[in-house]
Image (cartoon, rainbow, N blue to C red; front, side):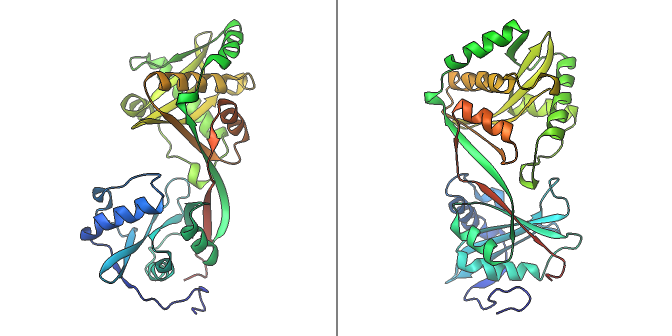
Length: 312
């Protein structure tokens, strides 16, 4: 046993840095490790040459059977490295120990993200002394069974109070894009988050470009002013609903439920089959909204944490 880490150091695997020739095998390992939740191809696993990124593989019998990667976690935790693992769980510990001896400077902790029903990763992080620090939820909605009819009374009541829902068009006025960004900033500041659910911050131009290029936005107006919004990202036959926010002065009226319901009705009419969403378990208001809309929760996502001080 290794006294510094509490993990066995003996390994029957051959460990080495990732090479471009490994890309196809690694893409399949990662796709399998997430149970097909996403699909990956070889082009996504080209060799990382940055000094703060490490990817190693484990071979057995001349075949790549596992992969481990360390890279900066991102804006949600700028002091952290993210540890990703895929493949044969028996190879995770030796790969982890190999990476620990090569950590880039300037980081204070390691984070790992996995789903609670993926036993290989869950077992490793628990055994390696990581802390189950944050939990996030994901949920899906079968659009074949979604109907807007139950939300019409809410829409009619809010209409009498001056609220109207619409899709934000590509050629919307500059003032509308500015209002959307102001609402986005307020939602980013107010919504509970953890490192995994903290997206990169977008300025006004970046948000406008993203919506125009790859998203669909729906807004609620009150007397002409945008006071609530939600955004959809089409992905194949599904849409991802994200960043639903209501202006603080207009909350607790059902605007988030209504604007998401309208967006889902649009997605169904456009032929999409399902909708997905997610966020931190601390965001109880959005959990309630999604429950009203019929989203079915999936197993939780767990963010594991371990400090680097005294570890290496």
